[in-house]
Every structure is written in C-alpha cells, then in structure tokens.
Length: 140
Image 1 (spheres, rainbow, N blue to C red):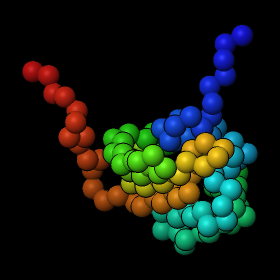
Image 2: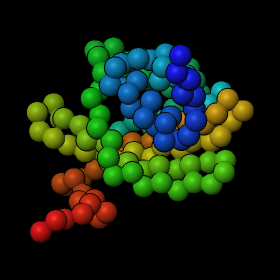
Image 3: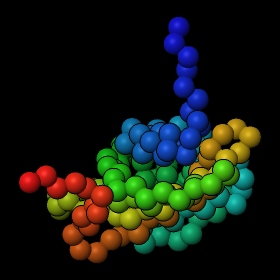
Image 4: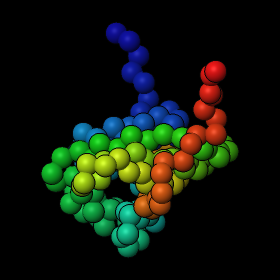
C-alpha cells in the first residue's frame, strides 16, 4: 500500500485542497482545512468580515448550496517562514454573464500541531483585465 500523503504537509497542499473542496462543494473538507482557533477570518467579495467557525461555515454553506464555485487559482505570490505562509492568488471565475472575470485572494496559513491550517481567506473583486503573470516566459 502506498503511503498516504499528509493533508497538511505544506501550505501549498492545503491551498490546493481548499480550491479542490470549493470546486466540489465539499463543505466538510473545506472546513477541515481551517485552524481550530476561533479568531479565524473570512471575507467574501463585497461581504462583511466573518470571524469564527460558525460564521465562516454558514457563509460557505450558503455559497456552496447550488454546487461548486469553479475557481481557477493562478499567479501565486508566496511569502513564508517556518510558522506562517501568506499567499496571494488570482482567482479566475466565470461571471453570471458568462464572461471570464477574476478576483484577488489573500490566503494566510499557520503551522499548528495538526499541520498547516487556514487562518484568513480574503477575496476582493479585481478591476480590469486579468494581469499578465510577470514570471510567464514568452518564447519567440
């Protein structure tokens, strides 16, 4: 039997599991990624600051009740040390009109005795076109 990968082996693995849970509308998997601390925070685009497990769970339940969100994270910018990791990503989404749109998310992770966990997810609507990734290579 192959060894099972630890779900919280790195902040990047938790982030991948977070977006996977959103796409599958899996509320239990999503909430299992958050820190046990009641000071966790989530801000949805245009929404209020939500603090604590109950408020965050209720908001995700409402957002996911009609299925997954189909978010495509890209252009990760990461700052980290031994105990915390701050990620900013461009979230590609499809607007109600069918047009592609993008959001900007900040995800903050801390290393806990149970592994890396989310302590903050904050998303803002981004104006204009999706920014070009400055690290993308252009081949001539």
